[in-house]
Figure 1 (cartoon, rainbow, N blue to C red):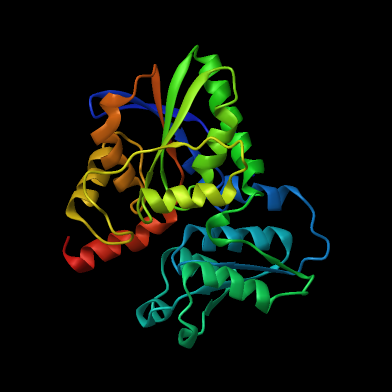
Figure 2 (cartoon, rainbow, N blue to C red):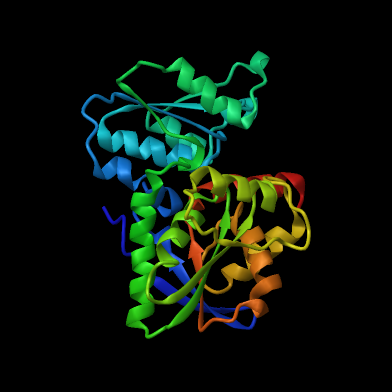
Length: 303
């Protein structure tokens, strides 16, 4: 199972040379961003654990990756979501369908509680308190355990720069919780090369992303650079320019993901001329299994 050492593909986009770090080409059942963030759980033994508990969207990449993880570990997955749409129950597709096929138990939070994002973690911690056979993973893998796999990614990027005699680089990626960007920057800001990590918020705005960094930070932490798109994009909403950007980027021969990458690429195009570095590395974080659902949504909405 290939979980490290993803290749780099060089393309031309926005009248610039972009080096695409292809984490989408890691093993399809445990690939991309989540393969890095959940690598710790796969690489270490948890002899008491029988059940893994996670939460997020019913089409989250983390749902699929955690379902693959528990299959490899011989555990059971309980994954909590706000709700499961009737049409999805009747016609499972994408990450939800893949996870269900692997035996994942997808459970709706009690609607009467009306839990906020922060309250969901607390509610689950209390629900599974003292259950030593249960392991709770924060939403999107936002925890210090993610450092293990993201550091491996950072070392690969550092190695690529050394092998290609690149002395300065900008690593660009779109962010949800910002965990990958934070730990990439934590490692790369201390390496001998001049490698800066730049990210853009896809979930929420820059203030939200800053808050996520602070939750992971120590007193000595340096944060990645945050840039924002010129227009506010609401997470999960459909935009004609997002689909157009996805189509444009795909003409390079690399298939991009349709939820995070369009906002990332739109933001990159708007800011690319401000990056004063020898090479620009775009981190492809996988998530292609979700494209099936996103394309269906665009078709239904006539976008």
